[in-house]
Image (cartoon, rainbow, N blue to C red; front, side, top):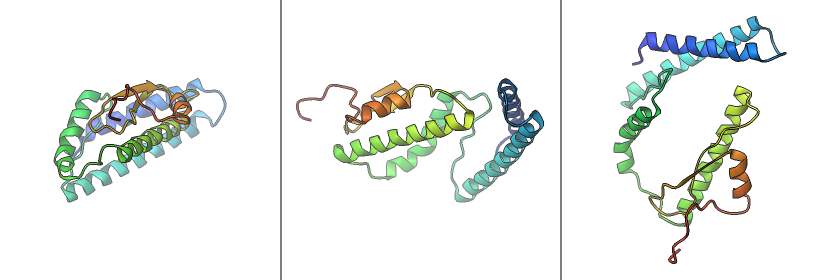
Length: 169
């Protein structure tokens, strides 16, 4: 279960960050309305987090907490450790067209999530982030760090292949 104090501090930090952003933006609702909205979102987040944690505990599922100042390497390692047993049990996609199509879908979801995040945060430009190679080779870990716009521009005309194809492909 999460540490209530850490959760409270994370909520306070989020509220302070939201207030800083709001004070930098001109127009829109006043500070009191923005603060009330943010406080409502924080209450909602706390309720959702508690429900998710209880459901995971009932189902015997792991929960990986992300603190207010996360160490993303540690978070990734905790997620990999939590998922490793389940991943050993599931069948893998066969290399080739099915795996290539799956990577393309995953990249498209990354674009959509990035755009939703940018809209929610009021970002004018999306940052670059990694998109997976769509070669369809099992175990390929090649990525290209570009903006969603750059990915979509390239993906519109060709599959994202980040290495030279071998003669057998």
